[in-house]
Image 1 (tube, helix red, strand yellow):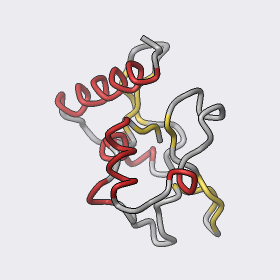
Image 2 (spheres, helix red, strand yellow):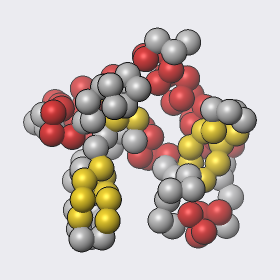
Image 3 (cartoon, one colour):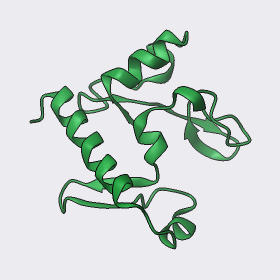
Length: 117
């Protein structure tokens, strides 16, 4: 999951150290990106416990709140992430226009912060 500068600051202000939860910038194409870690259930977000509960739910990154909606940068389309374990269930859901706009806004913020645009 990619993080905005605001997301990163919120998590650090809660007492977490970035070296514990972020991938190195070079591996993340100069974006702030949450680490996935090994678990008995396979790869999972650093902040998910073994029951699938988020340890930082109240301060979760914007992208986490919108997941599994992602933006395909090649087609400019908002879609359900193919890597989501529950993708088949989510494909049956209808999404609000405001959620789709929020994904576009988030990607714009991430690209601006990374210097991509």
